[in-house]
Length: 294
Image (cartoon, rainbow, N blue to C red; front, side, top):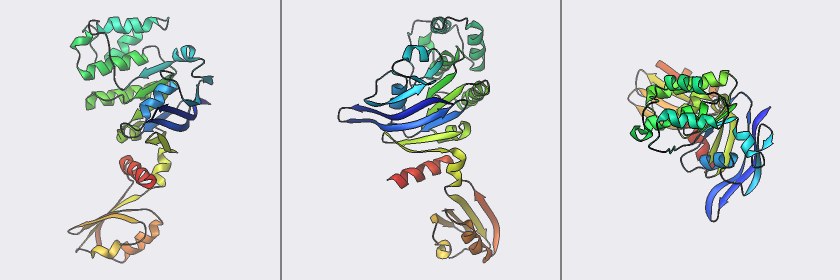
């Protein structure tokens, strides 16, 4: 079952670029990554999906219901964290969260305390006295306090220190194990690689690809680093499929895409002292798709 279905979603702003013909699905129980650089259209897609702005054309459903027609009903089961959070500065954190909880007509007091404890958030402080990171913690607790079935996160880690980011990721994994579906939008590729099952890559308002992260890795380059007893001729590995060839002293490194036996035969003909073969990280995969589209 698909919790989210987006079909040919388009949002235009006159001559300014918005998003064009966006289509992808998010399956129940998965953590789905939505990645692209700042300005690629991630936030516009999410805000259109949530009916915070209305599409120019196309459609979207959440829980099988049209997101425009059934927006109030759908939002009861969604936890949303925008990329930037703004609050009434004079309110205390606990008052803001209790006010937010009142919209869901359920007792969220225990849940608020649990989440605040995980995120190391002082409920008695005024919003005005909080740092950017602590305001982001408020947003996280606010988005999760009603135990939503669908969690939508737009650049959620900005302002969080590395230790708190780790706690946040663990919290999301726990929510996912408890049945929540998560749409995780980010330009920080290591976050998506850490959390997500599948990923949609967006560029200039259009989807480049939707793939499993494991498939992205399988269909892209391998990283080779070869140490030899003496320096190789620079042209030795100038063969089809080799990119970003570099040599420093006795170490030659490059990215390779193709039949790996071709490289191994070349390696077998030289005297090596060490060999490293690694999967590329998502950053390299991401740039590969952007370069390919360009």
